[in-house]
Image (cartoon, rainbow, N blue to C red):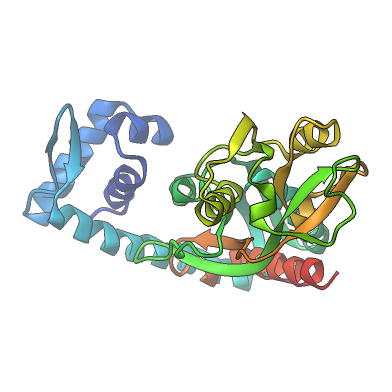
Length: 299
């Protein structure tokens, strides 16, 4: 019989990567974590860890047990949720991580929708590339993330992904720019521009790479910033042009142009652990995000 607490430690190791990180997350000492993992290996009757330089990594057996640990811990959470149902569900705390511009767009209507419920959202802003976002499930119940629409979904055996909405990415220029006032612009017309862009690995940068492929010209990037309000201000001041998600554009001194001939959009997704939606409180938050996305997309 496996200990629930030890299975949770194993899952934390799979999520966080090091014994030290697990110890910090669970308020344990590294030696205590290591001891519990050794006991779990004895319970399993096989090696769960193997050396990897100065660290350890999961063996094939360890990875298989992590998947079962996900199932067991999810079942425990469902049991807790079912008991909450008899107390008048949904209720409880749900930890939600969001990328900043997505949070600005969707979090206010979600909080409003749940304001009179028994569900309390604890929100965190996490500005990570889409490839790193799944790691946030070590600390959050739900992660609102975004990816280029051509990129594959991160869904897998230990991760569920629910698509919320598609947001076009447009070109923004200063009101005094020669392209200002037009409805659309072709990539070839942007080959000689100076760009204000985001850091690599984010959906906006993926679209800029697509422009480079079409034109055969590497973009001249003057600044890389991940705060759209700063990007807007620089562009409006004439320091370059930029790509921006359509719903994030707010500066009155900008002209917005559709990018012609390029699939240019980002997809919003909600990431959870498999079966997490069976917790009534989490299901309520997921539904509230979906309703908010429908409202935004229709506006």
